Length: 230
Length: 230
DNA sequence: TATTTTTTGTGTAAAAAATACGCAATAATA
DNA sequence: TATTATTGCGTATTTTTTACACAAAAAATA
Image (cartoon, rainbow over all chains, first blue to last red; front, side):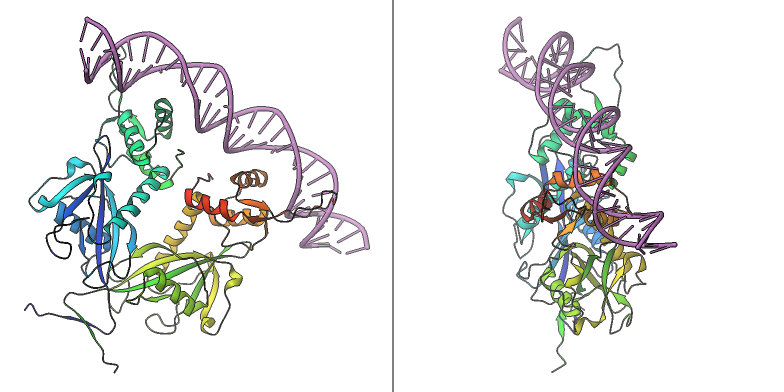
């Protein structure tokens, strides 16, 4: 019963979803790639993704493929662009609805299925399958824009972090340097941070303060947007 | 020879493009709709759009359909979201790659083909075909966001316009009121405006100053983005 | 046509926000 | 143990934003 065929009166493109997964290791931005096990581009690295099923939305398909190929679960993926170049796949006309997500790197369990999944620093990414180089550039531009207009970090940093770690993240994405004190002031004034464990006032140690995100404020700002100058 | 069929080993969704066209009449934001001539939703209003051809990108398809259905040509359309709900079309699984564009209303020539095209104010839009209500809400949100982060107006206003007209546009989109003098200062400081026809200094008439856009600065700011608070 | 209403040009003082920057103590590294 | 880097802490200065009034001209209305 492998001979089932699907017949249409007009030509239809195939449709895939792809996921650009960003991580952060405390120093630089990383991307999660998988090594393709089948043709075309067998052996090449690519973003996790695959064909959309007829009973799922693009977001559902993206999450499903992401889980199947990397073991990542419960990730908020967001559609950012649909790539429609006519010749982007050698087999047939294939559109891909590209998504991106920010995740904590430790959430990627190198499970069985995910044997082929691996993190790469942005500037060490190999040549990618299909038009995934193009997708990568667009996703990176998207992230850079997003960080200027909405908070980032909740999804990328550990639950408790220092101001320096947060600053490193911003500097890594934007490729700029901020004044340490002004950066901290700006972030604190946004109101999205709360001090995690207040040191005893009488313990005159010089250990960095720890913060966590104020989820409600974070969500509000993510919704409303702001403008971070640089 | 009408019996051609297209056969695939796996099911494929159909793919359409749609165009949300924004106009501005000096007072309020308008949207361009067409009345559907065929089933499903025959007679209902909808955004211009149609099935993607196999030899064109989404943007090309959107422009082609837009021209066929409204006569609009040489419009910069921009993809903003792909709608993938499973049941959004009663015929079969259909995804639509939605685009939007800002146009000068006078550019819409009510040509023969475009007999069915008509402008509607945002709050007078009838119930729409398919999930186009949903598309409309998302497009409007997109426009509201865009106006906060990038300049708008070049594509919507006549070539020469007054500061009040520009302010009306911003107030219409954002549904807020600005202080006239502060709004003008802010806009002028952005550097995207140039005075169109300087009045003779000795003619003490109180006719509004006219402006046009500085295309280079406008393009730069559109690229870089800014943040307009409100 | 006379009267009323709306729109326009113009500028400043006060408040708020952003920026640049130094020092001493502690922690990490060599 | 000595050196280097990181951390906490706060202020003076500059820049940006905001609030606001009046008189003349144009448009609308009576």
